[in-house]
Length: 248
Image (cartoon, rainbow, N blue to C red; front, top):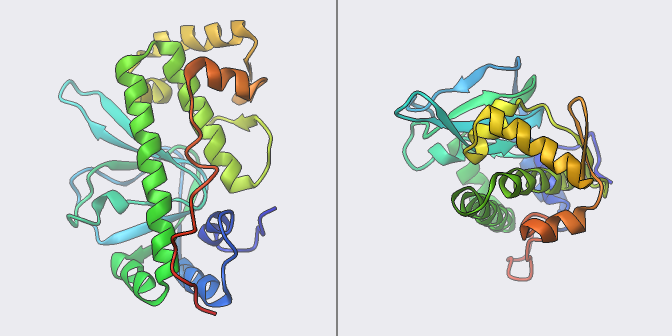
């Protein structure tokens, strides 16, 4: 079980390997400047200059891009322990709009601090690279789902992916979680209209594999639903046998 008093990134990375004291101290150096954002707040907008990285301490966020027709495409969701705005490191301006889904708390630090972390703690840098690679593969899976599958498969894949990522945060095996997303949010993430999302959620409930109670989602048979939509869990395991040795 995670230590709730620890740095959220420390908690998350600690799911994959035992961190040394120096690695834990290095991660805690990132949590000096904290800000709270109400639900619906745009933390940073697409195209705005930025030199900061954000670490999620609490709450949910999503990153989205604007479409020519006035709509939006939600690229990914962010949870406790996630580093956000890393999509902007290469350019110094935000490649997406980062929005608070629920009230959230973020630690802010300059991207140079991340560079120093990589230099002083190469094992942490390598692990962060491995975690980012797993997330990119998960995003590719979802994009494949959006482009090649029906609505039920898209929504089920997204719910399974969210459940997988929340397990890493909470360290629990359950399949019940609160989903603070609107049907519009879900639709913008998987390329469906709000009405189509509503029909699809009802169809999933009719299978008996998903239950809804307000904003609470329960997947009654994770394995069966995963097989039905060919879902692959990209988050539960990250290979660490290739990492350099950690400092003491």
